[in-house]
Image (tube, rainbow, N blue to C red; front, side):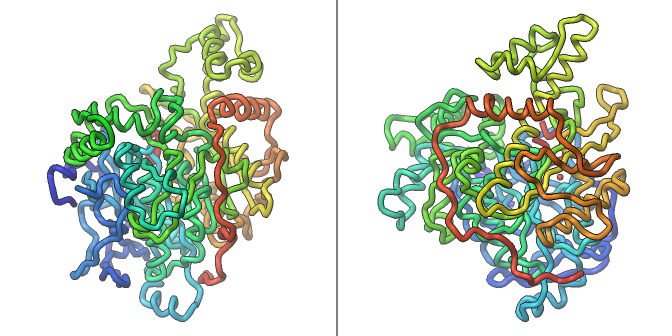
Length: 617
């Protein structure tokens, strides 16, 4: 994948090939204008094109630079046995990937996969030229806390969506961890000086730290240019993310350069309200350092000391670029908090020269909350939700985000609530009830911790976002769900069950053998939403659009239907949004995206998911 041991990793990854879904029987081929020919394979009526480059390898001088266009190839590209994943820490046990393939870590990782019904390929080019109906496109963004996983997992391939629902499915890699989110004074200076056409007075907006987001924008632009060759409709693209992938969906909803690149959005288990970093100035609330200061500190941990002034920063950055990817992974993940892997504020989303995208210099959002407050988001239909026990991980079902906080009794919970909610600590004790009675203490404390965990990370923020989107001027439809199906898993050597974080992934994708009728229903909902922006359809239980303050949601589980949020849940959500997020959000407001954000696709369609799941937080 790479060209130099000093700039790219060729560390092999143990891969456990999933059970073969089908046998590749027919070759599939497309030609991409300006790039070259692709030769994929057909599996059970679905054409697969794997490891397709959408950007040049970000190695050497291009490490920590906006993505550049891919170079054309002279010979046909076939699906390789080795699929690229971005450099990341080793995980216990074998990694899963598509049948017949293995994973290899490399900085040459900016690739994507396309799954599309094989029958559309022979006439795809002619269909596009004739302006006839094309297939809706689903663009999936994997999770993993911004530092794990890749687009090649069998658990969120497009086999079912393409084969059973006749959609075109795309999943793309993006740079992870320090490779995707490093902010540094020298990088911000490069960004400023490389933009030759900056508008007057906007030089101060130059910045760094958003390379992963820029990668996703580059992949979406690739879809606009080339997806019609696969039978997909560039005018009908749904972006969909799970966990941290859902955070990036929120970022794209608020990103001005994303205008016109997608037309619907699905936010699955993780609304990003306050997980941002300040590029400079005020300190990050988690690390005690601004994003740029953390980049300098991280360089020192790698053995690259910074000298004085701008020249010293340049020398440190050059030394960091000369390090191997393995060295960077080993140094950067040892002590970093997950919150390092968030977009940096006070930073542009890219510039016309460095990114080759033609986008002008723009001010980004400061946070999803600020964008919601200002109404500065793209008006597209949104489907969003969470699982009933989203604060629990698949691997350790009984652990919450506070598993290492030593909270074992009511007194410890009191201390935790006062720390997290400050002056509202007493109110928090009321909405997260517990008791000091010895026999009940552990059970009630664990229950309160579970509620607090899911509220802070998933549930409360999701309701906040749903209300804000639905209440906005010129609002597009919003659809809210809660997945309540409990799945059996083994935790601590015993069989337990729960609707844990990511449990719904295989139901939405149609790839979980346990999904049954509920999975078929959810797959139909998703496909209908991708086609029209409305999940409802013939034979499906009605899913009403969300109304601000109504408290209604669709329960997806043994009892499928519309439910009402309880008063206790509403009280918890109000506390978390008003006090927890309110104490942590910066004062900076967001600039809204440009007018003319996409509202819907042209009618040119054919008739006719440590990682807590395979996309984890």
